[in-house]
Image (cartoon, rainbow, N blue to C red; front, side, top):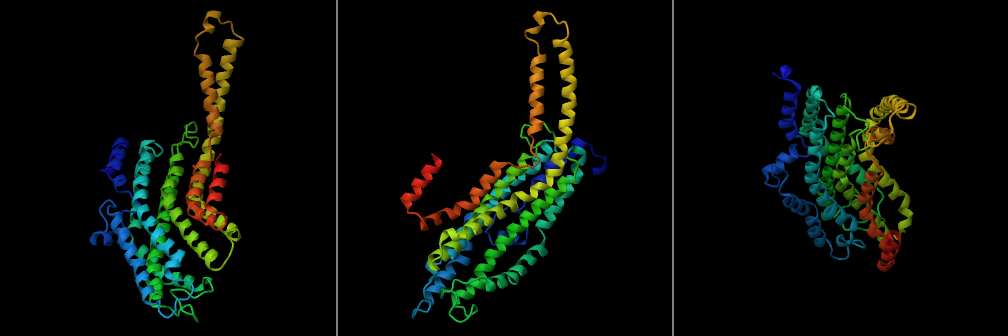
Length: 402
């Protein structure tokens, strides 16, 4: 039946089927497990329950267990309540990552419809488009993928934690002598709290990979790009705008870095300016992770722009030649000079050609880059209070704005 369906039927089948089931976050083994535990609804409801459950699983046991171990001064200089990195990770970044699922679900799903609604994917290519969606859903629901993420957390994750540079001080989770000389709170931190957080974070990275893989498959289709589209991206600017959905993920990454830097500034006495290159590199890296893969559309957009300039240039040449022969070198009666539409058409043609010339060859602009940069850097702004007083910081911000 599908083989004999016309373009209109294929489009209607798409809009009523695969598009409605498309979601980067609405599926997978963990999603099904949370549904059975009544921590998740069919459309990602109950965010507050999942947030509270995550705090009770990762942060609250550390508070209780570290309190039980604070006898005889064994914890030393850094207590759990003073560990900004732990609070930033489990009280801020983790809830943000959980809440971001609903935002991504709501914002990404309509974008898939837009490929069809804007006729970027033509009706005859809808079957190929549907196969791309099916591939995404299969990878999203894969049990082996999430098992691999869990295995990575308990192998590579533990190795990275063991090999990272310590603060050089006794902490609430480790006693002097060895990194693995852990307190009771330390065991929960290393084998429960951190793995849960790392799994959720890696799961977001997997979703980004799935999204970009879907876009790569769509890019292989013969897309109907229009060089005179007013978005200056041949109709693909909505792909760049889709990156806003991942702003909370970047905000969470910035929160993690802010916690790490804060601990080093407060407990090792390091100056905030000494981290400026690391912070700048961090921001550039994560913004590039979200926007960089969209450069896959650049060759096709550049080809569309070149073809548009050639086609509209040829058309403009023919029109201008006829206009010149008629109105400049011709013998048109003077009364016809008033109210003619030829001059307006000439102006419209010039505007169309200007749009083609201004067409970008990437599906995002400086505004998209700046917004994601702000989302990543915003959690780091409170660290400026380690350099400036609150009043001085406000005055500097006022001077920058005005």
